[in-house]
Structure formats: C-alpha cells, structure tokens
Image 1 (cartoon, rainbow, N blue to C red):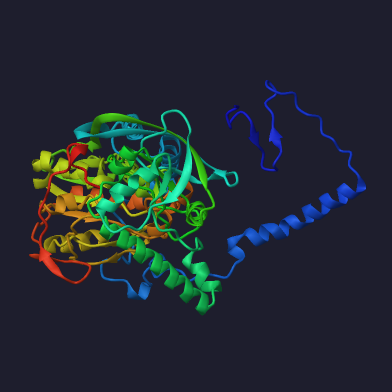
Image 2 (tube, one colour):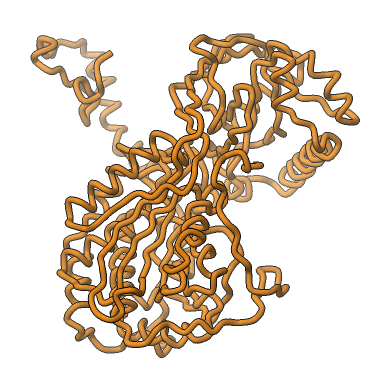
Amino acid sequence: MLRASRLSATATGATSYPCSLFPRPEPVFRMSLVRGRHLVAVLLALPALARAQNPATGAPLATSALAKPIPQAEWPEWVRRTPVTNPMLQKIVAEGMERSQAATLAQALMDSVGPRLTASPGFQSAAEWLRGRYTAWGIATRTEQYGTFNGWRRGVSHIDLVAPRVRSLEGMTLAWSPGTGGRPLEGDAIVMPLLDNAEAYAAWAAQAKGKWVLASAPQLSCRSPGQLQEFGTPAYLESLRVRQDSLRTAWNERNVRTQGVAYQELLAAAGANGVITMQFSNYPGINKVFGTPRQKVVSLELSCEDYGLVFRMAERNQGPRLRVTADAEFLGEQPASNTFGEMKGKGKTAGEYVMLSAHMDSWTAASGATDNGTGTIVMLEAMRILKAVGYQPKRTILAGHWGGEEQGLNGSRAFVKDNPQVAAKLQALFNQDNGTGRVVGMNASGFTGADTVLRRWFAELPSDFTQWIRYGGVGSPGSGGTDHVAFTCAEAPAFNLNALSWDYGFTTWHTNRDTYDKVVTDDLRHNATLVAMLVYLASEEPQTMPRTHVAQMTLPNGQSQPWPTCSDGLRNSSGYRR
C-alpha cells in the first residue's frame, strides 16, 4: 500500500498522483447537461452546508468564569499595575511569547512519538526525543532508572462484526492486553450473567469457551448530556435516568456478589476468546481506556455505540459474532525511568534546587496530548526559554519528566526516596498536569511561609499572566493525583499549576480522543513563559523558601487529616494491583 505522503487527497478532494508512479490523468470536461446542472446545484449548496457545520454560527454558549481574566477593578494586591522593568523578565516574555517553539515541540511529541505507556517502546522513544532536544540546546540531560515495569507493545487491532450482519467496529485492545497470536479469533458475543456468588461464576465459566464476554453495563443513549437536556422531554429524560440507574445497580450488584473472583484467570482457564468492556466518557465516540498487566485474555474496549449494538443483539439472542485480530507483544520487565534536563547553579546557592515537574507517561488509546504531553512541553519549552535568554541560574534548575505517574506517581516518589538531598534543598517545584488550558489556579500547598513569597513573586510578573490566576492562598498539600505531592509529603515546597479545564475530565483525560488537535497552543506558549518566569524568580530569591506549614490538611469533603506521609514508588510491576 502507498504511504499517505506519497498518494494523498488534495483540499478539493481530487487525488494527487506522483508522476514517478502514475501518469497524470487527462481532465475530462465532457458531461451531459443534466449532470452539469446537478453539479451546479451541489456546488451552490456547499456554502450552506459549510455554514450548517460551522459551530461558530450556532447559539452562543456561556463562557466559563475562569476563562475570563479577573476584572481590573477586582485585581488583588499581587497583580501588577505597572509595566515590568526587570530586564530578564522582559527577555523571558519576548522569547516565550514571540519566538515560542511550544506548538512545534508538541506536534512532534504527540503525533510522531505518540502515546507513552510506562516502560513501553513509546516511552523510551519519548525519553530519547527529550534528551535530543535538550542536547541540541546545550542543556545537560540524563535518564535515570528507578525500577522496572512490564513492557508492552501495541500493534494493529481490527474488530469486526461478522454476523448477523457485517460491520467493522470502533475499538481497541486495552493497555497490556494479550494479542490474538497472529491470527483472527472468531466467536459469539455473550453477556456476563448476574449470578449469586463466586462459585456460580466458576461453574458458568465453561460456557464462555471460544466466546467474547461482554463485561460492562451498556449505555442506553450515547448522546451527550447537554444534547439530551437540550432536546429531551422531561418524561423521556426521567425514563432514561430510571432505566440507566436500574442497569447500573444490577451491574454493581454483580460486582458485589463476585468480589474476589479473578475473572481474567477464570476466563483464560475456560478458553474464552476475551473480554469486552466500555467506559463511556459523556460524549459520542469518547471512551476512557485503561488496562493492567494482570490481564490474561484479549481485553477490548468498544465505543459506546458499538458496544451497545453488540450487547443488544447478544441480550436478545440475535447471534452477534465477532472476528478480532489484535497484535500485541509482552516485553517482560523493562527499565522504568525518569528523564531530566539540568542547568547547574553558580554561587553559594548552587546546591539548592528549583524544579520543573510533569509526568511524561500516558495511556495508549490516543496520543497522551493533554495528559500529560502538554505539561511535558511546558517544562521543556520553559527550559529552552531560560537557556535562550542566556540566564545563568544561582540555584540549580532541574526539570523532571516522570515515568509511572499513571500507575501511582511511581517515578516521582522513587526520585524523592532516592534523592533526599534534592528534596531537602528544594527552593520550589512547579508541576503541571491537568490539561492544555492556561494556568488559572494555584496555592501554596499548605506552606504558610511560602504563601507570602509566592504573592511577592506574582507581583513582579506582568499582569498579562497573573490577571488569570485565582490564587488560593495557603491551600493544602494534597494527598495524591499528581507528582508534586511526592515532594510536599517530604515537607518540600512544591506547587501545582491548575489549568483551565477545556472539559478535560470528559473529553481528553485518559480517553481515546486525547490528541494534538485538542491542544490550545496559545495557552501552551503562555504557560511555558509563566513557568520560566517563576523558575527565574525562585532561582534569584535571596532567602530560602520557608517550610512552615499547616498541621492539618483540609480534604475536598471538608474533613481534616494530618500532613501526608511519603511512600516509595513501585519498583516493579509485581506490586501493581489495579
């Protein structure tokens, strides 16, 4: 087959033929009067069609309050009212906003390197790519192994409905799923039944031999909640809610009754073809896709629409039969690592550290664009900016691109365990890990003394950056979720930069649609410049960051608990229990 770059469609829909491969067809202008009139009618309709598909012509949606700057009349005291006069800050803004490479770097990482499952070939390729960028800019770089994890390579997947009709289905293997052994596996699809206990499931398993087992509750409607709310009658919406809740309750009951059942082992022993699941993420075509090294049979995720199709036919005994070809390879325990870029400090504070932090690993269903390719690029571009403006840091600047975050902050936790001197001498760490939007929130992670310093730093920055930030004061250290907590538990001042949502939770977070097109490159440029300025100020700060902190942290539910304690990251996949 010809590569897309050799034989491609032009913007008009015509085919472009490389002259070395095909003779260029002569254009044919003869057509009947009737066909000509039809063509004219189609061409005249195109502008209307384009208008109908243009979302800008639809009803305006309410803008998120966080997507608007703080009104000038309400600016807090730390938003600067006058132009910045610090020459280095001026240079950083000019380099970051006028000569940004963030979009170019993001496209290369997300499109060409792609997803970066921990210890996978994709993750190793990303580490090599990062080191290549740092080296080209004259920034010292290294990769440090902290352990091993189960390596896995995703190949091509093809899932087809072959009876009672033929249709190719939208889906893929879960991460760490076994493959089909280089051949198609064909079998009927059946619904996992609701039985009384684990013993009943063990007895039932023999019926799964050679079959595909549907193991998730279906979604009755794959329309978005917003669309349902806009067009549905109250009666229909209530009926849909009751039916969906009933389904969910029944499947939850199945989970309760079978607690402790090792489904994968049970089905593998019975000779089942595999398991099919579906985790809808609120919009048509968008699913959350995970996986575990503990899978023993081929494990597939189907789109909401296609899962519902197969489920309905199986439930009604209409004989759905699937043919699946899935290429996958287990690579055994492979190195699990973190990659660093480093600019050594000069002077009496050179032994202290300012860190940039973002996890580099991702799930595999898409490109890992906003989770966390964007955070990776923000930190990479911030380092490039600092180097490009000729900054000579007083404290050592270290950018940490972590592995194993998605499996439990393993890379960053292991780094803190293995490098206590860095945590002990940390001036400040800035972490970003929740999407592509501009930074709109931050707090002092529970460090009371740092709160005063951060406010002072904000007051030195251009208001173009700080007018967007709803600063939360002292705040709380957090207990999980992203890598800065691996440092706060060690009483090291680490701060998370919260981004504007762009519907991160449903559209891109761990989904099959987390791709480069979702990246807001203007915000990426903005964030990298902001981080570069904060890192500069932290490096130049005359005083050591105070480590006084609150005794108790407040949880999202309002309850309090003591300051978190640190734990080591997993050093191999044997301890992974997901």
